[in-house]
Image (cartoon, rainbow, N blue to C red; front, side, top):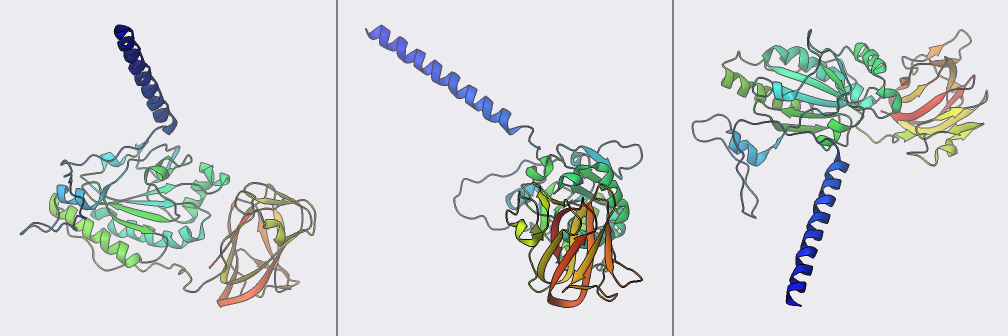
Length: 374
């Protein structure tokens, strides 16, 4: 009996061990490919203390933190992962990897998507930083993580890159692999990675450009000291860019059922509601939307060009408030031609004000994704 009991116990342990290993293997498979942290030149220091660790300071006589000190304060950058396309790579280069830049460059990772107005307002600053600091050792990589399916098309992204005058490399993150590696949730977002591979500055959204630029200058100065490179330009850039609103405006409004089950309350006529967008079926279908804003934009597309009337408070727009995508005809009617999938600029008021917007497509087939306001 004793021998049988021992055999039963041994068999039980073996079965439990096999089940544990199988479950562990299944969890690892379900996670897919995980982006690896960048390699650093010294091992990080770990601490068993439960007390908060004070931010380290450079050792006496040293201008910058050691790698070990940085490891206590900063996260390590993550490698690009799951990239499906590349734009603006240097001649003769087919891919780009952060591991090849650490120890040589300071890297600014810019998460963006081309139909996002917040990203569009940030791009002039990112362009200006690239022009000013690239020769001083700054590499910028735009990680284009699409919000909508049409932004997964690399040709659409190429067109946007050309339109916005982007010269730095852009990678296409269609499967959100790099986005997930950085645990990101925002467009735009900038991560500044220093010469040792640490994220030393993290900026969510628009604004505070002077703080980001100061962080770039500091990281480049450290690089210059370590590599014996030339001095870093000072001052701040002043691009021609639209500022983000400083007062509360209407929130972004999605039309697709995936994000806005109540989209039908803004519609009259016959519309199909898809997961990402709505599409009109008859002439005269209308979107009506009361808003509080200074600038009004719509993300839209059409398989064939569609003329859409744009009215404010029931009247055509006048030249002083019609934004760049609106045409005012000889009859005084204000319209916009919708074709390629992108953000269209409709109204630019002199200040934040309250009105009602009406959009009336003149033929079926308008695909409306979202309203954004500024």
